[in-house]
Amino acid sequence: MTTRTVAADADSLADPVTPGSVDAATATAAPPERISLPAVGLLVSRAAGRVLVGARRLLAPLAGDRARRVAFRLVIGAFVAAILVSYSVPLWYHLKGEQLLVVTSGSMQPTVREGDAVVVHPISPTELRRGMVVTFWTAAQSPRRLETHRIVDLKTLPVTTSDGHLVYDANGQVETRQVIQTKGDGNAFPDPNMTPVTNVRGVVVAVKTGWGRQLLWAHSGTGRLLLFGPPLLMLLGAELLSWRRVPRRDRDPQKGARDAAPRAL
Image (cartoon, rainbow, N blue to C red; front, side, top):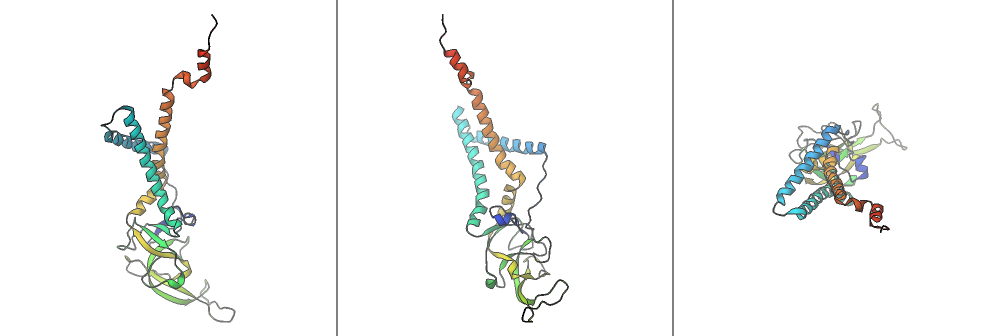
């Protein structure tokens, strides 16, 4: 099962997105989205327009300036709440010593589905057991990826060089290492490559259904644009309107002072 990290974790976003097996998700950051400027403007204007129309309908019973002020504050508050939720959730898990990863493939269905998010808690290699669902770095692929699969076996294997020769320690004994064999719940066969236990990043302790799509969108270029763009445009527009309503005399204090000064007859 492919997984990607979402912000908050510093080593998750440069490895957030840090993501070993068949249809796993990569942990490297996804390539930036390419959006044309006309499309950007259209998206922002549509989002802002829909929000304002909804606010007007909701506050239709109210009248005048008071209704506009209430609508403005409600809309700005809704955007601020959405921004806080999308960025504070990954941070909250990071502060607890855990990591929130987004599932980007279906190899673990039906246990975990594409678009879900999983909470990964650190675990010692000595605590690993058959049946655990773990997130680990792939050992064979390059670049490495983060993958989330279930442990089906634990083995001790000899260490070999890239050309297949055994590696011996200082006492002439063959070096060994602990590895795990994994399998996606939705796959017919185990993963072809063994994974060293030192590559395991943590064990899955919770599945958050549907969180992944929302988090990926909020942290994408389009998501940031639509979350931050409309409220910033509204604040800018409110500032320009307030400035236009100020009398010209008040905009130029020196001119006002000259007009108010007494003139000799």
